[in-house]
Image (tube, rainbow, N blue to C red; front, side, top):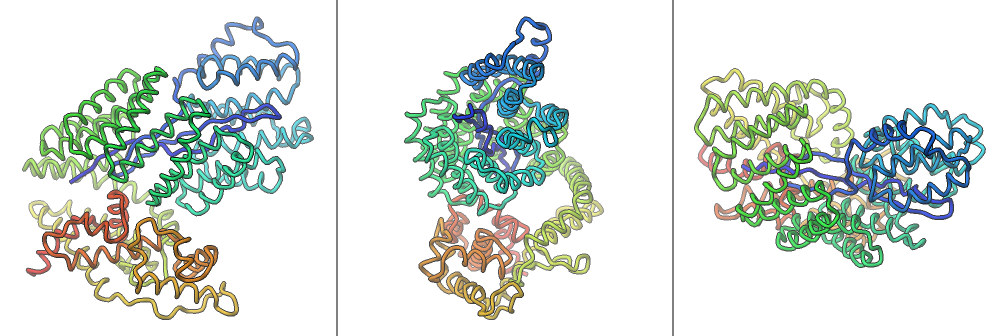
Length: 639
């Protein structure tokens, strides 16, 4: 039983807009998400969230004493702010408010555009996106002649708006504006920023091929322009995209390229970002010593910068790597250090994450009583922060802990609460989930469809059917009373039996129906058949870090047509297609394995190098973890 959590910072493109008309500068945006496997924190540009309000209050106290009287003075003030705004956000915000006020008074649109560009960048660390969007509305810039008659200024305001929407997770609205900029703007810098941010959005949406395509376009421009800062940031973004797709060796090559540019860059915060990302990647590769080395480099930078938030995050990451080495004493030391810093910063989410990780540490070391204490503390913060998904997961994990502690009353109490929240969330999300998952998972590969709830839903989408069935089974447990443990066991056995049936009925793809979108010669159909043969007969999916490029030499077709064929006939992205074959093979190996064959060996044999990626993919396609699947084997044999 393992349920280690950590804060994940995906690295979107930011600001990159904060430039003189002839020069460029940039930094990064962070978005925090919580996953259900062990992951680490990657973060940039932290500061106090109260800075923006303090800046406005300070300006109101200064009144006209800080007023700027000419456009030349505004330009000089903007240039000055760019020299320190990343190091002193509070001071920068004060000066930006002066710049805005003076630009409005003088009717100077360039000053307003620069104010929006710098403020949008700073919003990544101090917040205020809603206020900035409201300010854009008051400008009515999309109909205001002062802006519409100058395409450069108009498009830069559009760019600010799109980035702000992206920060607020209004991704579709943001993409609409970026697509519009692709059509309308001829400024390569604006397009580079747009491509970079679109790459981040597509990454969040799970469209990794598009994410890579856009981000590569972006860094091509920054490399050509010798914009080292944005080039390094782009390399790091690509590494993050590749890591999500278990292409860790490719990610490592991009990060090594980023490292070679750090000396020229001489930017402590960017160095922190690169070292932190390397630390996370080496942990995914289970090279924990290397992970600790890079995280400690990042920690040294955080201490030098006197940035307690960076220090708290990096301490947590180092604790995670020591946990991977099963060095529980050192892991606990770094978790406690991170906890103390989080408390000093009043960072509730950081406190919550550390309690989660400490709970996982005690669980792994077998001290279930202390694990329960830590998770109960985490639950207090999950309730305080109003995180329903996290509350549900914690209730489930606490239920499992109390089962280990042989406390069936509290076990059942927590499990009921887990089911109640899951049921509420399920009802709210059901219609949207049906549509999204049907599009994502419906496929001509019929053996993938588990058909767990065919009577309730005619569409046979894997994950949604599994979700609905599991919720139904969980609800039935509430009426199980004294039969709770037996019924839980029966549910897992039912899932196991269904997976066994799928394996027994597995038929390799031989014929594919003609598709209305295929060309007259059926070329894509032929490409898909070649790819299928390569997977089923040559078992190319067993190659770690297999890419589209690797398939080219095998099927003798370029990457574009391979990707189109998989999308058209498999209704999947390349990496979903790869997971499908790998998990089918993992089920087969688990079924046929000798008792002493370890799950880790099967993971490597199927082409995985990351334990978390393997577990997530296995659960997504089967409804249970590899350990749960393996635990059914003796029962199946004896039944």
